[in-house]
Every structure is written in C-alpha cells, then in structure tokens.
Length: 158
Image (cartoon, rainbow, N blue to C red; front, side, top):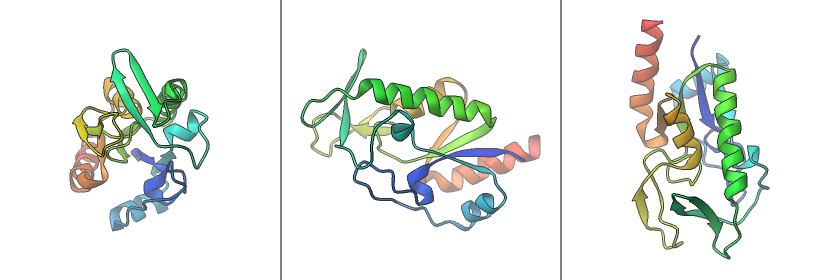
C-alpha cells in the first residue's frame, strides 16, 4: 500500500505559525487516513520551531536565508526540518507528498517573496524542494485531483 506524506496542518494539527490549522476535507484523504496511508509531518516543528511562532519568509535562495519579519534568522531550523521531513519520507517509502501551498517550508510552486507584503514568487519551499530534488513529487491542496490521479496510477503500476 503506497504511503503519502502530508503537511500536518492539512490534517488538522495546530502547527501553523499562527497556531491555527487548515484542514483539508476530502473523502479520498479521509479514506487514505483510515487505511493508514498518510504520514503526517510539519517540517517547521520537526526543525525545532515552536507553535505559535513568528511568520517567516525566504529572503534569498542562494545562499538560503529565511528570516522573521523582525530579521531573526530561522534558516537552521527550516533546513533541519527539511532534512527531517526527507528522512521521514524515506523511512516510510512515500510515493509523493501533499503539502501546504505558499509555505516557506512546504510550498511546492510558490512562496512569499521575503518582503512580508503577501507577494508570491515562483519557487518551492525548502522542505518541498528537498523532497522534489530526491525524486518525491509534491502536490499542494489546490492539486488534490492531480495527487489522487498520481497515487492511483502509481498503485496500478506497483
């Protein structure tokens, strides 16, 4: 049975920076959860950041720098969380991941630009990027249909 890594906040865990959650209600996800196929992870808490915590954005990609609006460098925690997330994905041999869009950790397509102005740029978050670079496809909550199709096709091929 194929396993899917999922951002903890999408499964109802209150781990977002603001202490809130953003549960994704979808019958297929609920089914997969009851089947024990979902591996829950929050890269930021895995990296040692508390909940709640100040919002953070990526200031630069090369070299990577992630800071809070006050300028506190949280890059080490984000990188540690990305590595821990990849370790978890490998441990459970996940076929793919469903992660929170726009997050500096989990965003697969876009993240905020580092100015704390709600401006998005095309770039993955550090944990999503780590998964992608290691061959694990990452989807976000707006790509649930693509995720389901991917998992169904991967299950058929297995």
